[in-house]
Amino acid sequence: MGTGEVGPGGEDERLWAFGELAQALAHAASVEEAARAITAHVPRALGASFANLALVEPDTDELRIANPSGLDPEVAARYRTLPRDASTPLTDAVRTAATVLLRSPADNAARYPHLSAEADALGLLALAAVPIHAGGDVCGALGVGWTEPFVDAELLHGRLEWVADLVSGAVERARTADARAALVAALQAFVLPDVTSWPGLEVAARYQPAGRGLGFGGDWYDLIELDEHRTAVVVGDVVGHGIEAAARMVQVRSALHAVVRLGVALDEVLARAAPVIGADDQLIGTAVVAVVDRAAGTVRHVSAGHPPMVVVDPEGRPWLLDGAPSVVLGLTPSPGAAASVPFPPGSVLLAYTDGLVESRTGDIEAGIDRVVRDLVGALGGAGATSGPRPIDEVADAVLAGAGAAADLDDDVALLVLRHHG
Image 1 (cartoon, rainbow, N blue to C red):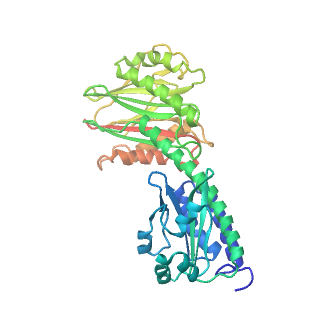
Image 2: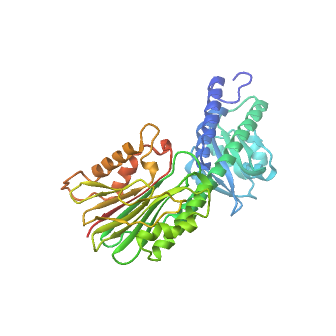
Image 3: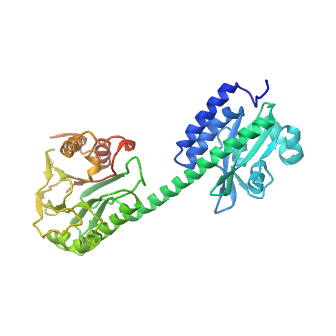
């Protein structure tokens, strides 16, 4: 091994691995992804046999190895979690905020005699544990092990510190992303109702965030059981993204939900909700409100500037529900007559937000035409005789027609309902 080498493999290979590690950590969207990047790239970058990330669990004050792949399964099981006061390289690095470098089995036996037999059994010749920081505090440690000797300990120490800085930045970003994901999940659980299928009515709902931003914004859907035969459907979209749009969306959703649940006539719903919705001068949005009456076999609906819902009749013929328009949310609507269409058993209703039909390359009319084709195709086409396709599969097929989630320009919310009779 020549001067400057720190482990097996050539210097060019290690420098290439450093580049791959930096790229993988830069794109890590969660702590789990960062841990996988570490186990995949750090060993090659440092000429090591394995590497892993151990993080402090705030609730238990223990260290947990985030991704123990590369370790012997029995060893991984024993050391998956470690008390913070345990005598190990990882826990010592966390407690002291200093790198622990064991250059030989003799070093290991002298400092950790209780671990030397196991290290010998695994063929470990050297170990390192480097503290990882997030928010100015030590949040964990990077563990690295070698089964072949290294020569230049000073060079290795410098590279360990560089990798630790890289990992610290990635973990801090990933923790922020994880916290944001938890916030989004909590918001969604609060705002988007559990989807329930009622007797005679099969329901599926989907929410797909766009490939950027908070992951939750101004789109929503709502289902309100009015009585044993009638179910109200509300789908809407408040302009904007992120926390502000989500906050305004909650305001609008709550207003419409309350007015509908109070039994206000559908003709009056938008006008009665307008004083609350219009209280924010920055609020602009759209919504559709429909009441599915299973006993009467009808859908009554109103729209506040929203893309038209679609009904597919039992024969597979689609109809756009565009007969009861009103002004967008945020302006004061005038009471107007709701429209009504037949909805006999075997019919399907689709309500959605404009993220499903808008694209950079096509107009909204073309998007609506595509959605109608996707819906009819998912249902089996006109006159299908093979039996109804599960409504969850129909919802998935319609959503997939908008393209990959990462390519979406806007969030998508949709509801699909089938009247069974």
